[in-house]
Image 1 (cartoon, rainbow, N blue to C red):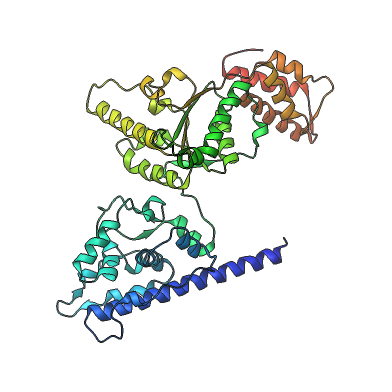
Image 2: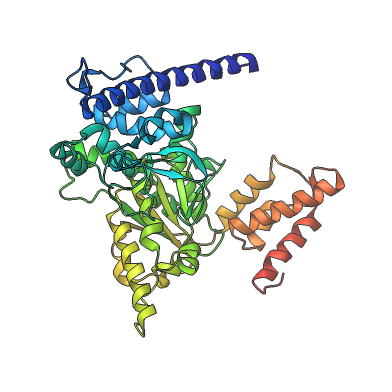
Length: 456
């Protein structure tokens, strides 16, 4: 596809996005206008704002329309969604809620909402949505509130952000997530940004499943994990085994550093088309102890609804043997661990925990794993394949380099061999020659050995 075609396609998408949102806003304005007219007992040709049918999105393939159809959103839910979008793209639509009650010379409290010094205009809250949809009818408002809570699809899928600084209730801001604001307006869905509120980063690899070099036992265990993700829906739903089997899958990867644990996690995600997120336990433990539920609750909810794989590297830092309770801090730390263990055990997707030492994992929790995969240092056959994969085809090798002999002599892990490759590539680049010399390899191996206080 050339740039002209690509640009034309993007322009068409943008026009479609704008047209869809504009029609939805026009419908929203009509609903609000009719609702206010009826609320203030002014003359109206309508008995109810429900007489205004939402725009037909059946043939619309814009991001907004696709989500409305996929989630089968109701009239009320579409009002809520467009209400959350409007402050970001057409805030003047909500200026009607800035009118004052002339009887008290103050804002109408039933409108809800608030003003933000950093943003002009009216910021809607759940109270605003309740007023638009329920008016002064308390029965309708109560019915609406029963449906609208943190378990609603808007929050579970991360469409609306839950502001943890506010109590969940009428004054909770209707806050559209950055991910979905970008998706609705550009067609591109941005993943959540790494932060204290979202202590995880997506990890991926350019390698393929065939590039994973491990022994046959490890490969069999990894294939079982991969196959569960592929066939779990068939097993649990079509074969109706959900009452006997928990939907989630918990697996422990253990073994020395550099043996492929992280690579295996990313490849499982790649072949099953699921994003993999590495959870930053150091952030949770060292900086925000006491806020685990707040910081990780959203992560677990979002991962579950979007079928993300959660990868806890160096898991023994948090999931090791429980601390002996000697004081309030120890008790609190154990409560944090208990919360995370519960979320992991109840998670309906795949959770991978990785550790260098199996014995560091609490025995009671170890029994809850569906699989425990040992990643040993590669044997001679694996080392031969690794040397070949890393160097043959990428570089020319001096005639005196025998990669089979290197595999036999130096018991390196895959991660250590990658470091050797990096060093050799740098030395070759400095010479402006894509030929690896034996001296480069030996110096690189010596550097790797020195990290473990070993000598050649």
